[in-house]
Image 1 (spheres, helix red, strand yellow):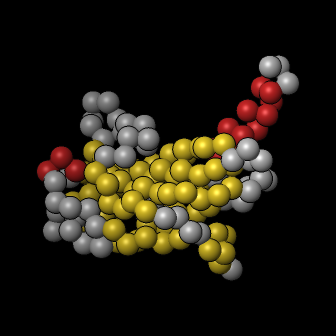
Image 2 (spheres, one colour):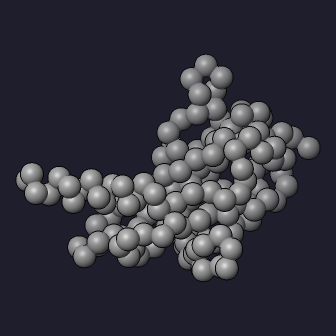
Image 3 (spheres, helix red, strand yellow):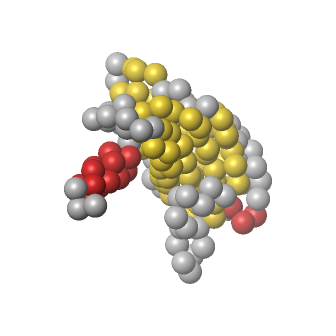
Amino acid sequence: MKVLAPLFAFFALASAQGLTIGTPKKGQRIPMERPFTVQVIKNPHIISSIEVALTIGIVSCPQSSGCPDPSNVGEVLYQGPYRPRPHRAGGNYQNFTVTIPFDEDLIGRSQLTVNRFFLIGAQNGATLQSYGVEIDTFPL
């Protein structure tokens, strides 16, 4: 079992570094009920992965407790395939156009969440990776 510990740590590190949100940026103001682009970047991996699915969601960040863990998807804005393509600038990514519906609970500080489900390694181990970025949402 001691031999496997470094291997599990390696997989955890690889998956933790595998995803970022290019846009919107932290603190960006996003109007509700208006489409905007979410750029999901797949960072280079040492090992290959097979993409299964992706979700993009929005969840409010209460002032008293802060933003929840990004694995809490919240209101689903997108659910479906993730097929990042190589680009000259910015690496491998895919853009998604989503719209935040009007919801009084989402006005102000919110977290845009991205959850990526993929298979990794020779045994195709199922992996879920979560990432979030705080944004400021407002009604039009």
